[in-house]
Length: 331
Ligand code: 8YV
Image 1 (cartoon, protein in one colour):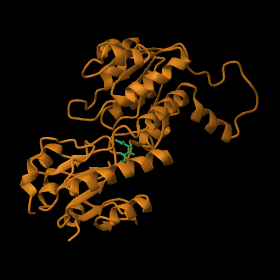
Image 2 (cartoon, rainbow, N blue to C red):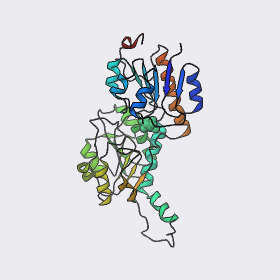
Image 3 (cartoon, rainbow, N blue to C red):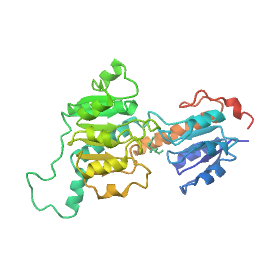
Image 4 (cartoon, protein in one colour):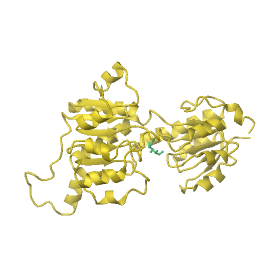
């Protein structure tokens, strides 16, 4: 009998065909969002599941799937999955690292540029018919070139962002759980390791590129925003919850910082409506990895992980190497 899998969200049809060559596939091309109970019911008889960052795999959901051997996430971030519960249950967990580094780094720059140079605000103003004459002080923004960029979270995407800053003659400072090697720092535009408070006080602009966890919850809240320069832009391409959105809204409203570029939000897609009335924030709907080539690469990476996991091989992007596969043998 072929292993059974669930593809929990709509995905490229050729990726479904690829998976259907090996598995008995139940897919969700109508892209309905399953409730937790529906998801648990759908994976009850499945050997593997292909999910995106929007589906939560809690300890309860995993416990409801006695045959499940692999959870393959089409995302690099995996805070939607209780990895410890999966490991304890003998279930492999995989993600899609690397394939989205460059596209996501591009997006961080797009948000920084748009917020600093007030691009979306300008366009709304122009479309509303307000452009009658040139003025010396119209829509003045902040310079990017020559400024100091602070990056919190200096993994692969953070380093890709830092490398791009060379073309803008910028200094890079960073804060991370661990310090990079001297070679990595040199490669990342001679990035200099500093404490978080020093970064917030010194950087002209701050980018957040760290994974979400209980430890990184509200890394940026009122106290941190108060340390930033009033001319600074804050960019979040990482995860909702890393920033205290209510505190950021207060800071933007009071012009305690100049602006923000946000691709992720607490409780997304139901973002705090107060953001919508602020002109000094650029808002995008979690599209950091959304180029055609990268989304295809992510989908194929997740598919390759699932095929490897259910054929007895070690999946290329296994997150829980300590998993004891004998726990689910014969299931
Ligand atoms: C995804 C992401 O688009 O990879 C991640 O962690 O945040 C995005 O690239 C999203 O999570 C959908 O899976």
